[in-house]
Amino acid sequence: MAAVTAPPSFLRCGAAAQYRSRRSRGRQAAIVAVPGVRRPAQRAMQRALVRTAPRCTAAVNGTAKFAPPSLPKDLELSDLTAIGPLDGRYGSRLKTLRAIFSEYALVRYRVYVEVRWLQTLSANADVPEVPEFSSEANALLERIATEFSVADAEEVKLVERTTNHDVKAVEYVIKEKIKGMPELAGCMEFVHFSCTSEDINNLSHAIMLREGLEHELLPTMKLLVEDIRGLAKAYADIPMLCRTHGQPASPSTLGKEMAVFVRRLERQLAQLEQIKPAGKFAGAVGNYNAHLSAYPDIAWDEVAEEFVHSLGLDWNDCVTQIEPHDYMAEMFDAIARFNTILIDFDRDVWGYISLGYFKQKTIAGEVGSSTMPHKVNPIDFENSEGNLGIANALMAHLGQKLPVSRWQRDLTDSTVLRTMGVGIGHSQLAYLSARRGITKLEVNKAKLDADLDSTWEVLAEPIQTVMRRYGMEAPYEKLKALTRGQDVNAETMEAFVSDLDLPPEAKEALKRLTPQTYVGNAQKQAQDV
Image (cartoon, rainbow, N blue to C red):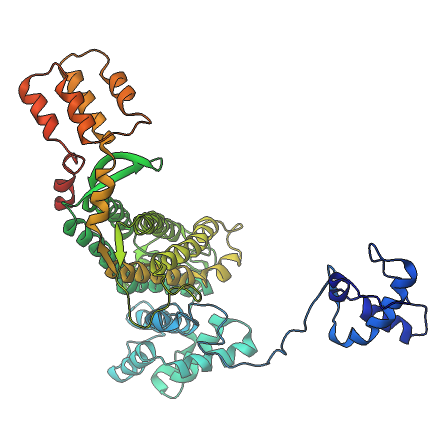
């Protein structure tokens, strides 16, 4: 029998491996049907291919799947082994957020709130069991509250392995730290007094958000807006062909189109800055039940209000076990709106780069493509857009989920709140990327002028408008016939205007008009932003 060559598709499949496996078990090999090959030839083909079986693995849809590399176990956390890009690839750009939104930070804020509550009780004469602390006792408490280290947080996490409760672990560690001072040891049971865990958590999260916005996110947002304002002013007088529906439209200036984004972003910033983190401190279901059972004569709602204000937070006086997170939803929605506008900016600038209106400064050593050496890609705006999309997806969930809690409380908010820093981190990363992209932009005036010079038809609008003023018949229709789908240049428009029955001054004004000068008050809008 002549040698039979199997088609490549047969070689790629797992047939040989299957045949060898069946034969080794002492069973008749199944015939693998190969189109266009007779049955005896198929048997010979199978026998010939048995020796190729070691090179095949299990078939997936008829295609060999090569064994993946072995998976290492117990990798230490680093930039390379982090699951998320915020702690991995982009970790060096977001390190400052770790002190605010990490697990360590949450534990630190909890300790801070617990200590401040103990000090508040000490200052209340109606709670004699917690006498006014000495300067030495307050100094120790101050160190615990303000010098809480990563090692201290690790101690809390070690205790949590036993308690399986993160806030209770904080309480136990604080007690351990103060029991060596007799003055504080005598009132250890007033650590976490009358508190539900959410009393501590909601204030910790509120402080976290306030710190994150005031020290990180808002400053970067404002710097980004200033960068765009710089573009608006720098290019206020650079005429640019606009596009509506992707087609040539009345000209503007490049600066004015940047000014539009300044105004839009500023509006969202102003709204975001009006939202103040709020807190509650009213016990297990919001009624001060435990407080009043121990000290029925104290106006605990007033004490709690003063305490929350002392932490720099707004007061929410009517709650369940949780602060209902409505302010958080407002905050995340405002950030998401800012982000959505920035996506619009990123895409517009990306488009202007594609049109050639902007050139990008090259950086020595950078590679735009692994195969096309000439490429200078708008990667910063693409990176920004991608991160904004991730951030907004998470912000949308936070804004929709957090205000919803079954009855007086369920635990779904707890796991969701731990992702606040992720949404803010992706937002921050996007702002930084957009700012870096802006620094690389260079206006290409020659390309802007060339586009304007090739679209004299945009002057149909002012001509027909002036014709309307002076009562000429069917001005729109006449300009439509002249320009729509036609090749139009300066001579075409001048000839048309010359034949119009207009006052001499109006006719001369139209003749002087060019696509470069027909920009309305765009320059003023850009300069005034």
